Image (cartoon, rainbow, N blue to C red):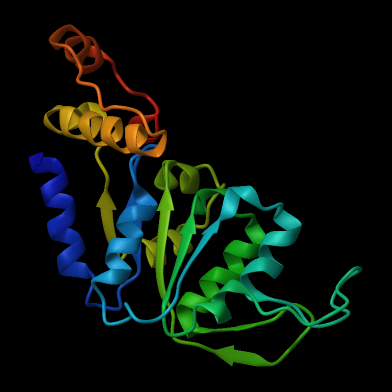
Length: 217
C-alpha cells in the first residue's frame, strides 16, 4: 500500500504495453524478478514465454553460449547444437538479472543484438533475427561502473531506455506489517501449524530493524 511501491506499479502498467527495454534497479531482495514478470504479464506478450537468466550464476565462458546458443563443435565439449535463451524467448520476454556481472565479450554481443535485433550462435556466421522484449535488473551502480571502464557506456544507454527503481523495504515501512502477516499465514499453512499473531512489542522490534536483505530476508 506504500506510495513508493504504488508509483513503481504505475510505471509498470505504463511501460508494459510498449516494446521498450526496461532496466530495473534496486537492492537484492526487493523483488526485481517479480516486477519483470509483471511487465511481461501486462504486455501483449503475456501468452508467450518469460525466460529468466541469472547472469551471476553462470561462469563467463558459459554465459555467451547460454544466451546465444552454439553450433556443434563450436568449442571443446560442444557435442550438439544448443538453442540459447534469446531464441527460447522469441516472441516473449527475456529477463537478464544481475546484468552488471556480464563480461566484456558478452556485453559487445548484447549491444549488437540491441542495435540490430539479431545475433549469431557461437561457431556460426548465420545471423538469426528474433523478436524479444528485454528486461534487465541490477543491484549495482552501472553509471559508476561505466566511468571505471567495467561496463560499456554505449550498452548502458541501450539498456536504460526506461529505468524503474525498486524501493528498499526500509523505505516502505507501511508495508512491513502486511508482509509479515502474509508470511506468517503462508508458512503456517505450509507447515500445517496454527497461525500466530505478532505482539505489539514484536512488531515494534521488527519495524525498527533495517532489513538489509529486504523482502527475501
